[in-house]
Image (cartoon, rainbow, N blue to C red; front, side, top):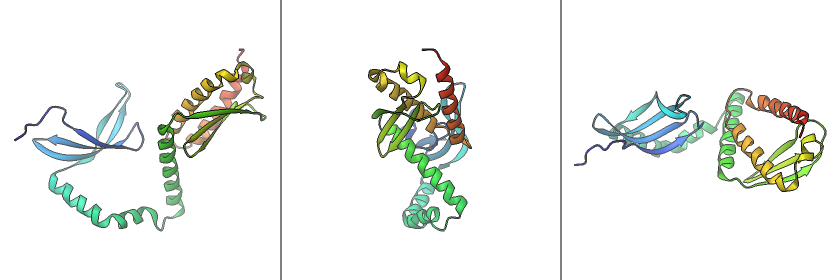
Length: 195
């Protein structure tokens, strides 16, 4: 008979927002084995995610019952999430699917290309994302462009791409509007810097 090892939890899944993920682990509790499905939160003091009280710990018989339910009812469950959605539900589902696809795509590769174009205004770059391709377009009409050599364009593109990755991890109401404002204001401020 095996004994309960220290720190024996085995993480099987970490899903959703990196700062408040849903985590599924195989774990021990009071001398029993189980499946723990739990929301985590971001602890600012330690910079780590930690388990919250929001979750459930399943004993073997409970897990088997739920597993059988998911196995036999998977089509019904999937259609529940997809079929007959009202406009609000459809909008929320689309936003969530887009956000998840963007996260997966941004995390999959640092393959970034860049080019130069010109347009009026203070925004000094645009980001184009198609499939697994990430492209940064630098605005040659912007004041800062004069200080960027084409050789350093790749470095600038990677810095801006890191910014885009960070932007896509923000999940607050109106985040797209807020970040668009930040980008325009950022362009204004960069234009005022003496280089």
